[in-house]
Amino acid sequence: MQALNPNKPEDDFASVAAKLNDGVLRPSECLSLRELLSWSSEELAAKSGFSNRTISEFEEDRRKLSRSAQVQLVRCFRRELQKRKSIS
Image (tube, rainbow, N blue to C red; front, side, top):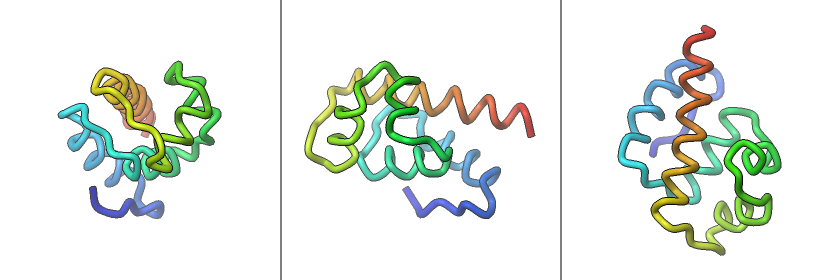
């Protein structure tokens, strides 16, 4: 995933949403998406159903997540991206 541009979030949301279609999420992508959305790790944990520790360890590449867990995170991000797109 290319670097996200916080000055043009609408472009980034569209490109990120397109890349989320495969459901695979790398730790660095999770962190980038969370930061793009201005979410704390606690907010992502609450929205996704994972613990804050799980989110933090995944983003630091100290914990592997199953494919189904990655898909759950991707769906969480996708819902928020779609919500923000409909607002703008």
